[in-house]
Amino acid sequence: MASLSFRDRFFSPPVARALTSPSGILATGAGAAVGIVATAPLSLPLAVVGAVAGGAVGLAARLRAAMPGKGEGPRIDPFSVGGPWRAEILDAVRARARFAQALSGFRSGPLRTSLEGIGARLDEALDECWRVTQQGQRLTDARGDIDLRAVDRELARATEHDPVSARGEQVREQTIRSLEAQQAAAARMDELIARTQAELRLINARLDESVTQAIELSVSGATSSAAPLDRSVDQIVTDLEALRLAMDSLEATDPGPGPTEASAP
Image (cartoon, rainbow, N blue to C red):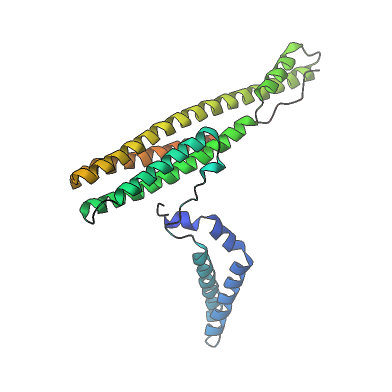
């Protein structure tokens, strides 16, 4: 799997749990105690400094132990997502496996070294693809929570009769705005789901093409031919990151409440 940066490993669930766990608190206290014992004979101010420094060292050691390793990428479980999302991540997993199989046939040397670097980028691509498919599944689930038929029925009821009071008109306008916002949210979700699935299919086709190029390199043995492949895989990773960010932007948007039961009096 792709190597994780220090930032990704630090801002991770295991570290967050360690920060507030009893063991994290105990580690801080133990470090502070050691600092006090070591500096108390010198002076009171130094004992305070020693306590702070010791506590920081103890907590840092606990957090460092909780940090995942560089090589620990996200665990990929294609069967935890459904429908087209599962098909896309399975295609990406198969492409990565084919590349690994092709790489195993290379002898040690500059070409193999170059392809091993490309393999690391493919790991990043696979991880990004997995994140996108997970986001896609969450988006699909959220879209399923919007019952457009119910929204349409509520909208028809809200516009069917004229209200008999100013308050009734205000309620009706608010109801219509809410229902129309849900319709717009559903349309945005449908559009993003369709576009993301289409782009994932294209990216998987490009991954397959990259694997085919690697297999061809195993026959030609031309080290210089690895450079275009490297650039192609880099672009795939970049495109997947952009796709994930597009999904993030919609996930941050509140699609609005479910169908309201309010109706004009």
